[in-house]
Image (cartoon, rainbow, N blue to C red; front, side, top):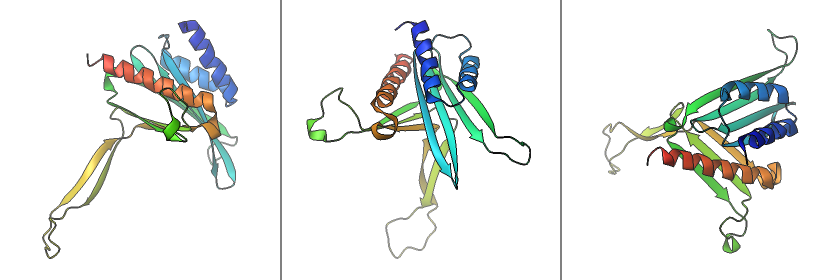
Length: 194
């Protein structure tokens, strides 16, 4: 697919999400800065906050040099805004900064699954070091009678972005789109290490 055709398909998918498409596209265009598009994902998510429905859209775009992460959220009336409003933010991450691409697939009836077969659910987690999570717990020496302070032990992990899609909630096409994006991003990050 040509860059122009891929950009047009992205715009169409943003439009189909039905979630402030002009705002989402405007924010993304600013972040892309004219760079050609290699792959993308549009993920619309609705959540309930008490008795209100809140919508959120995430757009991931891959260019030859960067990963673009866009989030658009809607907000209710508050003390500073007398009308509901939306915020759109983007982050541009250089490909060489991406240090992990984790793909978790959930398949139905794995005994009959074949390479390239459908996944019922996919979780894509991308790390580039902007957000780190540290899980600590008290360290011990294994002696149940020991009362000494052994400090702490734990793990640190990058957890900058996770996107979960499922065939039941988002449709088979979105699941395939996330897998294709994960493949393109993995290939782009592998190329920088060759």
